Image (cartoon, rainbow, N blue to C red; front, side, top):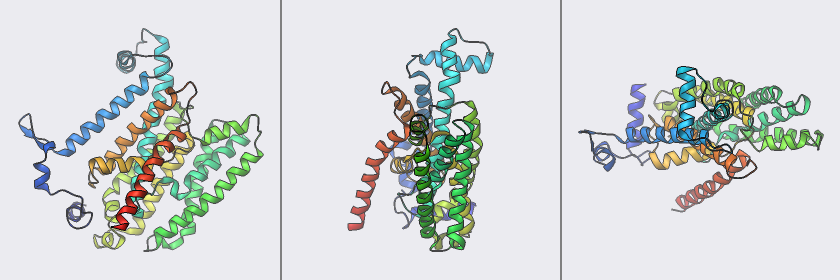
Length: 377
């Protein structure tokens, strides 16, 4: 692994990629000036900045809302419960923080980190800057499972269970359609085409469920759920999504060097001794697991896996050692802030998926324009 990391570093610093800065220039940059008598690397500043951003986003998510809670009270409620176990002076504020806002903020952080890391992994895997988790059709499969559970058994556990099960069914369908080509040169094209097919089939199934739903009660609930929301966040959903997203993130973090090598090309990755087929299969499994779990508890929240990796790449670079952890931290902060805005901007909560689309579409247009200009040159 150390040899692979060294080779990747040399490739990034050389002709491949072309964006890395030589070590001598990096150490002489303004961000590495003397701090308390020692030079501080840019990576330390990046970790510190993203960590503070996440803490600020968490605090804002706890204090902002219809019922005003001061930052001091929010921190006091958390610390009193953790260290002393004694109730807070304001029982209403304590109930709001512990039962409503804290699960929602934590769920937004987990979903943001998971979807962002999944998007970054797919962009490296497919060597396509516009790839995101919805590319595999898992979101459509999970959406069908969720609305089917809502139609037959009602909201709650059936929705979450159905979404998770059919999300994995969609992923297995993509693997089956792609067949033995997953690890070969044309495998990425077949995977994308298989994802398009699976997505189209499950999207049609969702339309059939809408047609069969009761237009007075079930249909409005189905439509709102499909637009994406964390309004139903609670401790049960938090503990349901945590192991699924956690396993997926651990797999992707363990594959970060292989994914960066794949972003240089399959032949270069094979030259570094990487099993391309195994890496692709594990990455797709992790991405599918994360996406299915996220859709199961929140509905479809698109564009996060596209927006956050590009923001991190433009602001902090794409060093294979730190890129994926940076994306996770940034994604958690991003979705917390967007969700906080969605429930506080208006008297009626704005669906989370609508806001992420409104923020992601302009960036998508910018990326398309930028890629077009590079092609012309």
